[in-house]
Length: 124
Ligand SMILES: [Cu+2]
Image 1 (cartoon, protein in one colour):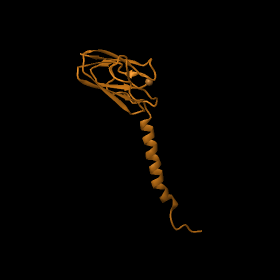
Image 2 (cartoon, rainbow, N blue to C red):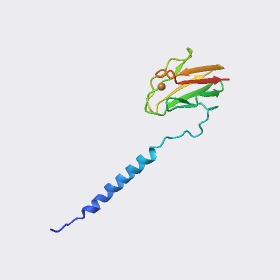
Image 3 (cartoon, rainbow, N blue to C red):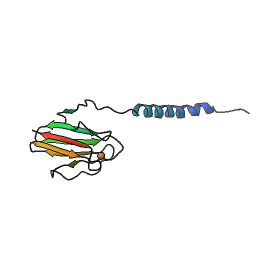
Image 4 (cartoon, helix red, strand yellow):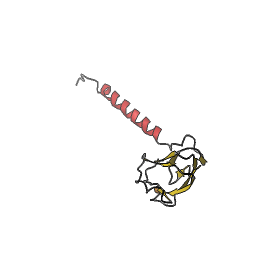
């Protein structure tokens, strides 16, 4: 029986697609380390990963908007320990919550879902 077309040729694009898909998966599997993760600092960006705020303690100037971004699959929220703001929505992976601190002071907060997750924003 004669084969008039080359089945192998049709496979090439499929194999290329598979190879690209595998490469993409492999590249994204690692834990993405924050660019400049310190234990504290003047950043206004707080990541949430490994059931912890990173960094947990930050110092900002009055008027700074602090943004928390959940970087893991577990949902988290932000709840001020005082009555500065109401608890955020539960943040899914990749979602953020922001609050602008206008008054100097130390403002501890927790995750409303996991209250053992603690952080503090110190405003000067
Ligand atoms: Cu949490």
